[in-house]
Length: 172
Ligand SMILES: [Zn+2]
Image (cartoon, rainbow, N blue to C red; front, side):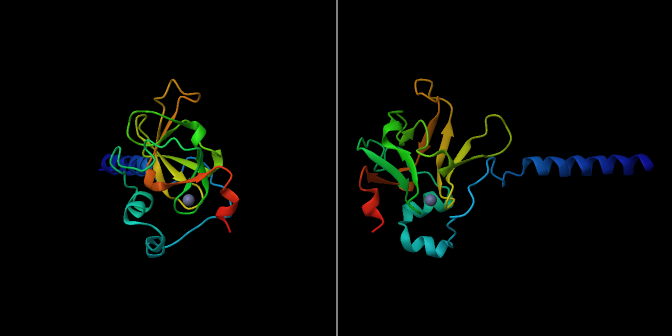
């Protein structure tokens, strides 16, 4: 009987350990302090369209080639549709053939948070806005022809393109 209790204790211990490792809630990287924007779903719904809300607040994915920036070649900075934080530069946008806007690096590293969806090596890595937690898309390391080898696969619905030079007038 002592053996059974011992085995039970081991199983419980390993189970708790696995659950702790597996729990994907905590982001891999530190987020910048301050300046965080936190709103309720009701508040977000007031400022976002249904599609924008579904993508950014419910981690949805727009259908390929349906987003307004999939084929966009305009010069500017792609900002977060929720909070306006600069996320990607049009200079790093490239044709991936996937149907979603693709970038090889963020405009500012700390503005984009990467979060692995599980611990398995092939688990996808989610990309979020560091200021408001908007779901943006995923990042893959399958772009060997690009300077970083990375492909940030981003939903158009999570982005708002601001023409270069007009960033300041945006705030007025
Ligand atoms: Zn944001």
